[in-house]
Amino acid sequence: MTSPAPSGAPTASVVAAWQLPLAAHHAAIYGYSLIGVRLAEDGQIQLARRLQDVHRTQRDALMSQLAAAGVTPVAAQASYLPATAVTDPSTAQRWAVQLEQACAAGYRYVLGVSASDPAGQAHAKNVRTQAITGLDAAALAAAQWRALLSPDGSTEAFPGT
Image 1 (tube, rainbow, N blue to C red):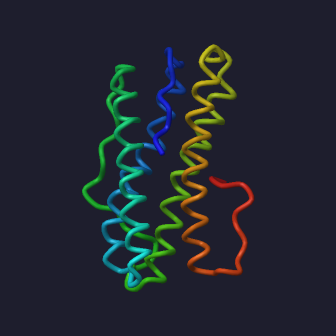
Image 2 (tube, rainbow, N blue to C red; image 1 turned 60 degrees about the horizontal axis):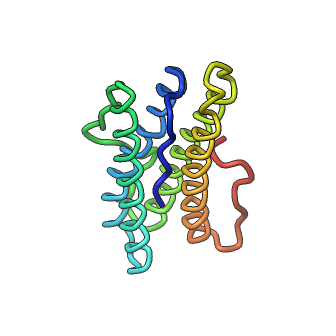
């Protein structure tokens, strides 16, 4: 599930906007390492590992894309703290939802910047395609974790808000 790299050169504001989902991918990669050790069921552990790999792939693609545009990609922090302590499977799943929501919000931000940047309209379709692909992947991952937390619960109508 990699995001397609856009062709051409989007404007500086759009390129800078890609830093937000990149930062969210850094956090998710770190977070899934901690989440995985707190999960009890093998299927959930495999899900965490798979999603961590997806985030690595997306991070690497964004870093390459930013470097190709002559922009220094935002660096990963040394560590990331969840809003609440991750001590058991339930808190691990909640943090996974939060990490995926942060990724969705990053991609949604890119969509907003690209839509309000008239100078970048020539490349807007490629940017939107990549951002929607990333938003979709994050929303689906968050929905998987939400379903584990509350099988009868609802999904989020507008991911990334």
